[in-house]
Image 1 (cartoon, rainbow, N blue to C red):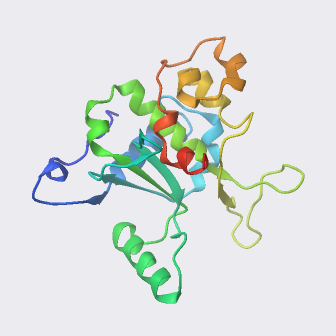
Image 2 (image 1 turned 90 degrees about the vertical axis):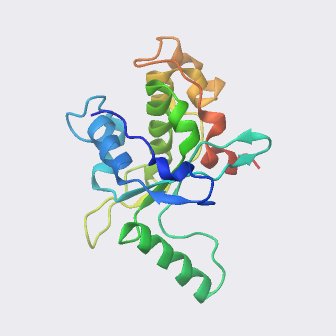
Length: 207
């Protein structure tokens, strides 16, 4: 399945800032990385087979601490909205995009995506997927909802072991965490690319 591209209209100078739903990105991510038998199946994303993930293209330039942000994974439920109206308004926008509030939302810089190589695009998507985690209990066991049986989802940041999978598949530069260098010594399984410092989710946790 060829990787999808953003709609041409998003680059129209007259349209202003845009956030455009990108269901094709999630279809591609599932067929490439998540689903059983996927082209580049990664078992570390197995919990996401039960997740509802939304994706957005944007033409809005973003930067943090002088670095360009090209992708960001966030909880689907709006965060930081103050007051009942603010939260309801934010959830209304999410519903307009996706028809429901997803477990996670991944936002992608459409301009960067257009000029990225296939390997860079794959690395970025997998990096964002690694942020979309299954919550764990105090003993480290995966948590499941008692009511639905579905995984309980949570955002995952960086620590010494969480992004070994990115290094294994794309090389040390993709994770930007030198403590994981041992995983890189065997060489990437797919390609050696560098995207971690341009991940908005990671940059939020630097401050």
